[in-house]
Amino acid sequence: MKINWNYIKGVLLIGLVLFLLGFTNHRNKLQKIIEIDVEFEHGDNLFMNYEMVNNLLIQNGASVVNKAKSLIDLNGLEKRVLEHPMVEKATTFITVNGQLKVSVKQRAPIGRINSKTASYYIDRLGEVMPLSENYSARVPIVTGVSESDDLKDLHRLLSFIGADEFLEKQIVGIHKVENNQYKLKTRVGNHEIVFGKVENLQLKFKNLKAFYNYSMKNKIIDNYSIINLKYNNQVVCTKK
Image (cartoon, rainbow, N blue to C red; front, side):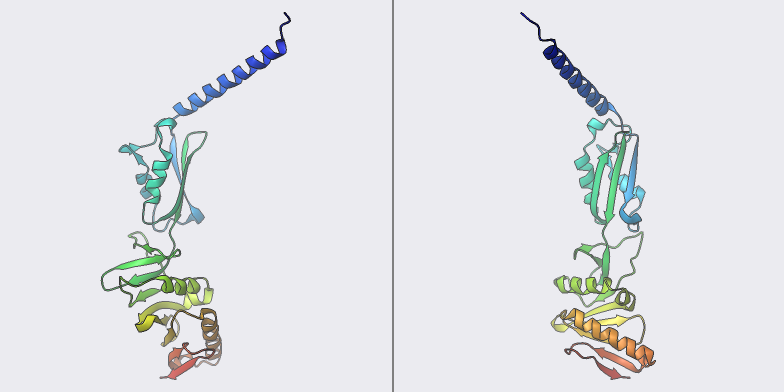
């Protein structure tokens, strides 16, 4: 009987590869976490700091540093970070050399609501966000909102303002009045903007910008107490 050495060599080679893979995998599982590396997306760590994130990376009442990789529950750690009210997105993974990497994206507030019963932010996703002891965001202050109000219109208005460089600098306050209508408070000029309902945003703010360009150029911006944008394709002003 002729022995097929090529076949035997192939079987031995496969066995050697499987052995090495198993040995490497076993050795990798025994490797310990040497350190935790926290990264904030875009360098933003305004509402949280590195210590706060590290304190969330606790497993069974202790730090994960010096624990074997095989004992680390990455999904559980990631879930803990995501449950923090200042976190929008989080990713955790372990590198080959034993670093626990944590990437954190913080929530981005676009307005601060001051109601009779509470004070909180509304973030870029339209969700309620608590205030932070570490940092106070420079966003428009919103008043006149009750706990039962739907925030969709307000979120839409704030998002439009935040996406425009001029409006973001100029609009510092929003007040909700009856019938889901709004008034705006500005940084420059001692006047009130009657905005009305959250509709025709593009046209209303285009008209407002045109009025500002004209009034500032002619140095008459301080002559008006009310700028009304409620009416289609026109700006109605009330003099002081």
